[in-house]
Length: 196
Image: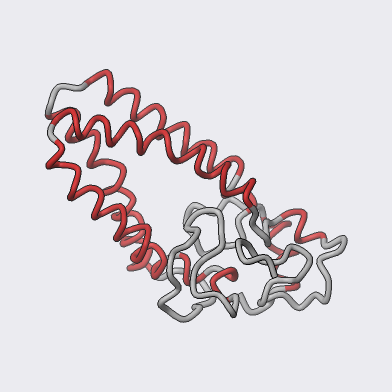
């Protein structure tokens, strides 16, 4: 098994298929992740974080610590519990960390929980996203950095659009409120992953 990512020739743990060869669901939904997908995700996500760090530090570096702590807590723990633990990829045995494109390396502290997210989980999910992505522009606006705030908001919007278009459209975590997999693909995937 590839230590960096799961073996692309072996069906995921929740899958009933014996082989990934010519799998219709595997063409419609991303079952396996690789370095290319991780790099694509980072290309979409990193620019807004770099701009956020610059904007916060221009105001004063002391404002950076609360944001960095909230980012690490949210993406490293909270999001994993409320959203990622519903993903079939989270069910993979033999690894203590996630090997997916979005939260690569995050610890798997909780059990796999198939099924949809609860209302409370969705509220926590969106509240965390709001804190992470709205804190920087608030700090920038308070210090009069209107041009940098505009650049941050534009890059963040572009990043979300690209994620929705290229990643969320094929993501196997159907529980995620941002998932954009069409019904045909969901049906094909659920047919061979009936317990998700």
